[in-house]
Each structure stands twice: as C-alpha cells, then as structure tokens.
Image (cartoon, rainbow over all chains, first blue to last red; front, side, top):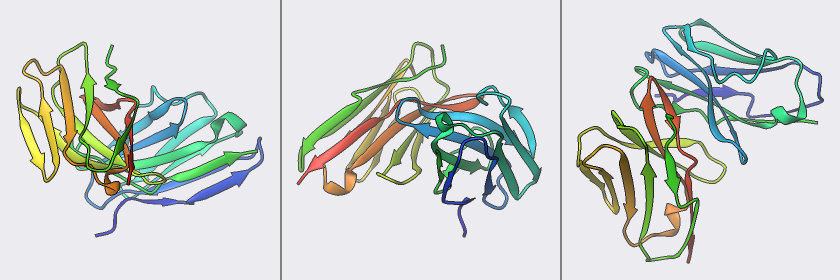
Length: 113
Length: 108
C-alpha cells in the first residue's frame, strides 16, 4: 500500500513568493496532520483535520499560513507571502483516527531565500 | 501544561552499549506513543502504551509506562549502528504532542 505522499520533496523560492505544499493521505485514514520541524522548535503541529474538517489550527503561525482539505484524499498547506523564517521541513501525517498511530510522509524541505 | 519533557537531548554511545531515553509529564497521560526518526527521514511509529505499568518489547527495544502514567522510557539493549536517529515520545491530548526527542549516535 502507498504511504502518505507529499510533494514537492524540496522547494527553494524567494521570500514573498507563494508556496503550496501538497499531501495525499493513506486511503481510508480519517485524520490528517500538518507538522513543521526545525532545529530550534522541534516538531510542531500546525493543524489537523478529521473527516476533512479542520479541528485544531492553533499551531498555525499566522495569517500567512492556510490549509485546506477539499476531499478525503488531498490536502494543501499554503504560505503567502513566504518569509525566510518559514524555512523548515514540513511533514504531513495521517491516521485512522486522531488518537491512533500516525503515518508520516517523507516531508517537504522548504528553503525561503 | 501539556508538554512532555524528554531527557537526555543527546546521547552518544559505543556500539554494544545500552541506551535509555526518558519521557516525563506533570500530568497523567492517557497513553504514550514512541516514534523513531532516522537522519534525513520522517518519524516512524514504534509503539503505543496505554496501561499503567505496561512493558512492551520489540527485539532489543523495551518500552515502559510508569505506574502513575506520568512517565515512560525506551531502553535499547546492545545498540547497533542501525539504531542511530532521534527517538520521540508523544502524548495524546486531543492531538498528539511530541517531546523534543533524544538524538542517539552510535560509534562503531
């Protein structure tokens, strides 16, 4: 079975540009999570969805960040406008329920110049 | 708060030595999950502990949940170079909250 699929794997762009990260969760999983990982702050939960509905977005840094889940098989995390401090690895994870083990994608390594 | 504290932050061992990382909470945990992240990789689920005093083993890895359900530990017996990575505990609080992780390096 395919795991969680994220794209792109790497993104390098200039500050001010819009960045869109994509995630396809494991089929049948009802919960989807977006994380950001940096050396300084570790692994932070940004937002999570249950059955395509955002449940907790308290980790979203600011209005420049937005996330959508239009259907059960696709989610996006958008940063507009991007800033150098947004540089990090962004992981998407899914699980069969929000208290079950999470399966992570390979991540998107984002660099904002 | 809902944080889980992990110690140590880093551990360097000689291959063959044992390794232990600890996860502590000021509040009672409903359950605790452990994940491993290899360098350059993504977190991979290892195990979930639910019951007070629970002990689970996976080959050379032993996971323990404290009697008061406020702490947990992961012990690796006779480390190998394949054990290198960062080990995270994570608590369930409506959402999964990760500790800062313990980075293990193993010298051959």
